[in-house]
Image (cartoon, rainbow, N blue to C red; front, side, top):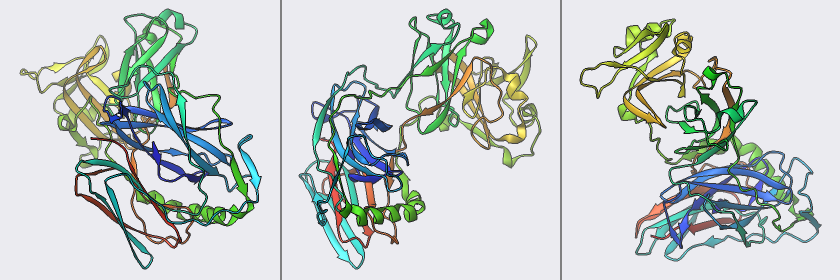
Length: 490
């Protein structure tokens, strides 16, 4: 793992790039990595990083209340037995809090920074200064394709002593398709549902119809959802299918996938009064440039969802049609291959499948609101139709766990958060943190403040032999450091 720089302020983002290697060669076997930032006080921040062909990128958001101190950052996959940790410094310029036993006061002067260029073999860096603009070209002069992480930042001299610390890990099952979200059942009737073959657990995350997964409940009460990676901060809807009919009083909740390494030794941060000017400059830069930096983040490609494809979807943007107060009116008036029929006294939604020659409308349709399955169709038919923005029709057969659905319909609200939908008592909604979105940082314009800023960051730069990555940055800082890290071998 590499990061955009080595020193941060509390409240910033650590931009990171990671590669998964087996026997020294990058491998696409694992699809998710985990990163932990730890200190004497324990785990301070964490993230999940989705991997594509062995490479991944993302960020770690540092809490604003983080204490000043030396930290170690390391990344690993679920099957790793060891990994390497890198040293980082975090300063909190708005608080006097310090890491326990992690800070030493010193009057030693901070050395003046000098421009640094770190390059792997086969990579050439060309720097050309013109006024306040620095033009850079990273060129692959090797005979093979290279995957690089490129960082350019203002070096204000607050750099830690680098070290490589190996950490032992327990190792386990490799996650080939994405994160395996593990959960455990709890509640008064938890013992009654363990290992019952007619019950299934389901998780779904609002926003995407593909973020729905089912799994059996093991005899030990453990549930394993094999996902394709869920991204971002989500409300996770956890439901035990069939538990409401049996009147079982129980739920389940995910368990943490992080190792949370204990007993590690840490370096100490030497805090000197001479650091004050550099820290004040950083503080001003973060306060004044935060909105501008947010607009410069660029999302990189992420793993595709596997359950539904956009090519399969027929979409109805309700703003293009006459609005109706009832969901059933939308179905009757706008969507010809969907009907509502009463089955055993309850209204059910049926769908005509494209791959059924007779166009017969099928039962057992997967009906969703903002990507969250709704098993009782009556609830959706009674939903406020004015809160809907779109209806997505997937007229094919889909398998979700052990259940086969004859098509799917996703009703999308204007807020994409299934608001106002009432759930059964067997449903639990929990906060869930998925993989961080992979981001790059584009060069920005002139800043009013120079203070340890990251000026450019590309975590997954793929360069063919002879190809170059060219860009320019603007800064008033006297020292600009460029770090290029070779992340894999082809």
